[in-house]
Image (cartoon, rainbow, N blue to C red; front, top):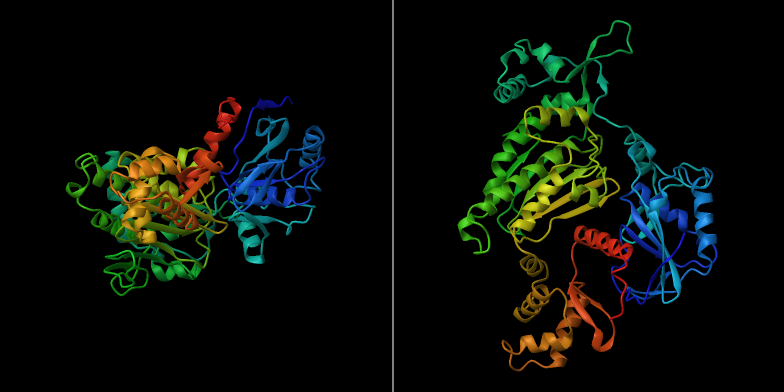
Length: 515
């Protein structure tokens, strides 16, 4: 493998994180290399870069790999040794070698393992599997190991249930769904009048082919979608759906609520919860006429309404319903949050781009799609992010844990969201606006731009403001001395996209250049 040659590197950012790890290596792989490989594979995928050391906090320097060909040979040998790692996920295109100032670094991309490949474990010991948290690796506990095993199935909501009948379903919901399907298809003959025939046609009941008599059994997805609450909780004892609306970001008292078991909603299932909440989400979107002039009239409301619908559907379509955690939608002044148990089955990057969609609950997903509530697989992520980009809003946050997913859709722009979170001063907000407008900026240029608004500003004061913003990790610095530049830290999702862009530039020989 021939190494690409570059003249210089300034490697202060991006730092290590949930999808990025730097390691030193001389003539062999570091001892903990496969721990990280397992953690990335079991979590969200990631990139391991060999030949980079952390000189001090969040500042990385190139130390190089002394014998890169030997290290790469060892990697391929170990990767195809099942006693070392249980699944071989990396392809030849995922391993790249670069030369910088005569020093070689090696970049190895680890894809997120498909669910039927997890858990990815090391040393031929199934329980020796790792997960990625923040910028570190840790071994799975018993509950996490069980989740990885159960979730390794391609679909987990097509389990066939014994002793469940039509009496366990809310037939009013079934009939409402049938009316929606009839309206969509405009083909009355495809929507049968007999409830059992209809439910079999849409996958709520299926033939149990493992039994000689081939009886019809209810699927777990059908029970969750149309079931009466007491019937659902007989199979899923922790089943809970919650929606809360708050007047302010810091309020603890809700002003509206939809919750399983509440006396106002005694028999919520997935379908009835969706129909209630989909009408409430637009109430939390500000009037489009009050938006800034750079937002198209009416576009803000329509786009955010579409984004929240996609997020709601994803939240109900993809959970691990056997979890003890609650499915929860929260509407606050500045943002919406959508939380569900179960990790995202694709990487954050794939979610943003709409690539490689994988459904955990194929029955539920099919029921949503048949009536047009959900559209083509994988379309939700791109629509959620497109609505933010189009209306200049803070990019959505996608917070993934090994056993949960949280999507936060902001109603406000990046600077406003930072102000909401950190309660910044007017001068700090002014500095952030200048940095945002310029992408990144030096202390000297920043002072010059501030002088028209703050005549008594000094370099000392500018540096003090910048240091405070850095201490809160709102901004980052790149370079040294007079060459130092400052930029605004972005969300993990934007960081993923940035890292992808950086390494694409690497491949094109355009990124590593002397500053």
